[in-house]
Image 1 (tube, rainbow, N blue to C red):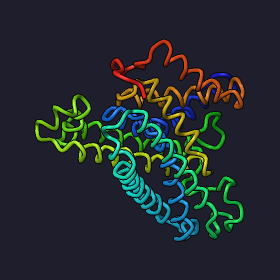
Image 2 (tube, one colour):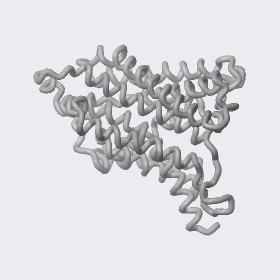
Image 3 (cartoon, rainbow, N blue to C red):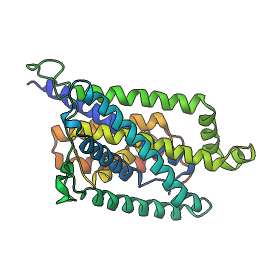
Amino acid sequence: MGWIDVLSQQLITGVSNGMIIALIAIGYTMVYGIIELINFAHGDLCTLGSFLALTLVGALGMEAWSGFGPTGGVIAILLASAIFCGALNWSIDRIAYRPLRGAPKLALLVSAIGCSFILVNVALFWGGLPMQVFGGGNQAAAPKDFPSLISNENLLGATAAITVTWRDLFVVIVTLPLMIGLTWLVRSTRLGKAMRAVAQNPTAAALMGIDVNRVIGSTFMIGGALGGFASVIYALYNNTISFQMGYRTGMDAFTAAVLGGIGSLPGAVVGGIVIGLVRALSDGYIEARWTNSVVFGILILTLVFRPSGILGAKLREKV
C-alpha cells in the first residue's frame, strides 16, 4: 500500500466523519446565530438519540431482519431519533432557556452546562436498562456495540488498496440532502426569513409582528432533529456508542462551528469537514492519543487569531 493509497484512505475516512461532525455543528451554529448561546447540551442530546436508536434496534430485533428489512429499519430509526431529539431540544429551550431570555448571557451558559450534565446522567441510566443490546444492563457505563445494519463491503472490490464502503456512501446520501434542505429552508421559506430577522435584531423582528419565541423554538427543534440524524449516522458508521460520546462529538462539532465561523451554516459544514480531515490525518500520521490535542489546538489558534472563523462575520459578543 503506497503513500498515496494511505493518504487517500485517510481523506475518505476524514470526509465521512467530517460530514457527521458538520451535521452536529449546524445545531450549535443555528442556536448561537439566533440567541448567541453556546448550547453545551447539544452533543449530549445526540447521545440520547443514539441510545433511542439502539433501544429500537433491540426491541424490534432488527439484527435478524433480512431483504429490505434493514433498509426500512435504518430509515425508521433515523426518523424516530430526529423526531425525539427535535422534540427534546424544543422542550429544553422551553423549560431551561426561554425563562432566561432577558437574563445575562452567563445565566444561559450555566443553564446549558446544567442541561448537559442532566442528559449525560439520563444516558447513563438508559445504558443500564435490562436489554440484550445494553449487555443486560449490568455495565451501564460501558460502551455499547451498535449492530452492523449497513454492509462494510468494499465497493471497489475486495482486492482494492483503497476501501470505500456502503457506510461511507450512506453518510453522504443522508447528510448532503439534509444540508441542502436546511439551506433552502433558511433562504427561501417564511420560517427561514423569520429566523434571519430574529438573528439580526430580535426586537425589530418582534415589532414587525414576528413571534420571536416561536421562531427560536423552531430553531431548537430543527437543530435537534439534525442532531438526531447525526446520532444514528454516527452509531451506524462507528458501531459503538457510550454515554460520554456527546462530549467528544460535541467538542468536535463546537470546534468545527468556531473554525467555520459560528453563526454561519456554510461555515459549520466547512469546519466540520476540516476537523474530520484533521482527526483522520492525525490518527494516521501522528498518533491517535494526540488527536484531541491537535483539535483543541486548532480551536485555541482560531479563537486567538481569527475569532470570526473562516466564513463567519465579526462576533458581537462571546458567552
